[in-house]
Image 1 (cartoon, rainbow, N blue to C red):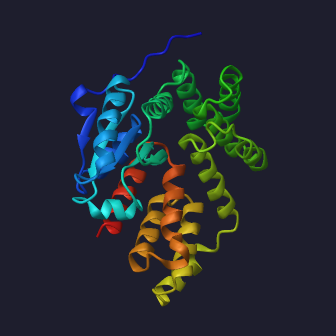
Image 2: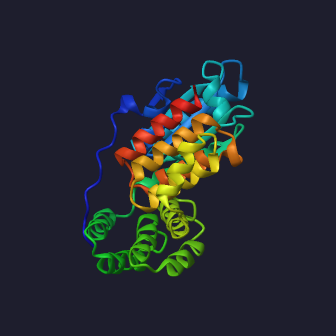
Length: 301
């Protein structure tokens, strides 16, 4: 087994902080690209919050940088609470790679808090296989999908529930045109990683590839939108056609405009499609980061 380096732990002062509507994107969504972030939704009048909060903080401190914690006062940040549909407090969400991956409501025993933090700590550490995954990702980026698939498969032979390798293998199959094989792999993901961001990213890419196969003619759809700006279906289909032709940034722009015009259209189809595109991009991709910030500004406007 090769010994691989790990990312340095965040400074102790950054492990626990209070967030506001202005800092939520940076403190939670963007910070979770590097390390899982626990978000504690609380209020000064909430008795159980006063018990749960210190227990969470102690568990996060004990994790020694593998997890961070952000506290959100729901009375002072009502838009965040509404957007995340916080119905009661205390509520705790865990974010990883920009997405909520775990959580619970109400006061829970210390043993459950410990197990919760341990699960999150495992997301950022992969048993020393990180560099092998990075090497396979580099192969995939360079077009050597077959070599990447073999490397991902070798990692999974050692650790069958390695989310990064599992999602990577599915994406390698997609790059090779083996969409049915990729879909079967994703449908049979181990329960422990079935909702992991790396696996969800592969699902998002698969969904976009399926859509691309049925994308309409870009020129006709663009003309339809220009002729009738209120034609939301044509605008949505235009975004699909743009993404299918590799114009990802323009597709995001079109979907953001659709969301601005009518966020509720077709059961929030624009927002859902944007999240699919963001999920399919690599963590930290500038287009995803910029798009998420713009979408967040529209949501909280």
